[in-house]
Image (cartoon, rainbow, N blue to C red):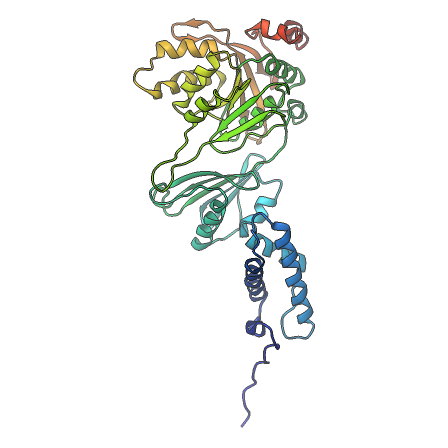
Length: 432
């Protein structure tokens, strides 16, 4: 009687699973395990020593290809592609890594494991990426591992900064219906100076010159706009115009502000620990920054009662920059008057409104249109006058006929411009 064929024996001294690698998925899975074992054996930190992990992956793939010449194992179809996938699995963020590496992708979000979206040029796209619940949980855990932040049933939300500078936001299932919601906003550097915003047609040359002069003069500037309108990019570009001889302190929830400056200290908030202590709020950071001898203060964004501490700092003669969510420049001023009221019942509009009027000098408002183009739509001056509890504002630049054109307004504090040798009236006259 004929005996059934027996599978070939495994190679001497090799992994006994090698002989049963029948598909490319089996091959990649086996190499994945081998790479993780090698990383542990070498004592590498996979997220900080990516180059070393890549070298190990290349060696494993090359050795596997050499064994495939004997016919014992399947050859690798695409050696470079397999190395990239292995590095993404071990050092990166697995199936999301190609999206994070794609320079055209601005943001990635997961509504459910089978509905992964990206944003390109301000527009949303549904990808064909299909994940599992386990993969999503593993990705979130791996992302948070290097941030020092946590998410659990007692703290179902988290904001964190990934090693590449991307911003992570997670809402756990139970708060988010059905599945955990994950957002990764990539740090895409398209402009680091105001002149580069002009190249991107987000700003006109004359408006850029005016804003740069205003920063040098030490005016307090509020940057407003909706989500993904480019507020942080504008804040970075404005900050890049701060003279190098000044000391800058920035405070934000997670590190997003980036600009070249020789004397700059960046601070970020911290969530409470497992014992329920150790939380550092934005209000704490603003107060702490005033003890660090700043020449300028930058606040990434105000959303709540920390707006009061910012106003008090600006009202004391300390120049500053900040962003705020709003639909227009005038609504930004209204919101700046409302948020400080959240600080306590003893804070009244009779105090806040005049403080805002005397503290904020300019509001730069940005919008993103239906084509995904981000641009400045108005630059408003705040002369400090109040009429029936409403802060007066004058357009220095406004959008007319689809172009940012010179308005009728003049910025306050003309003496600040003169102090740094700038004739602001002539500068704006030439912009007409």
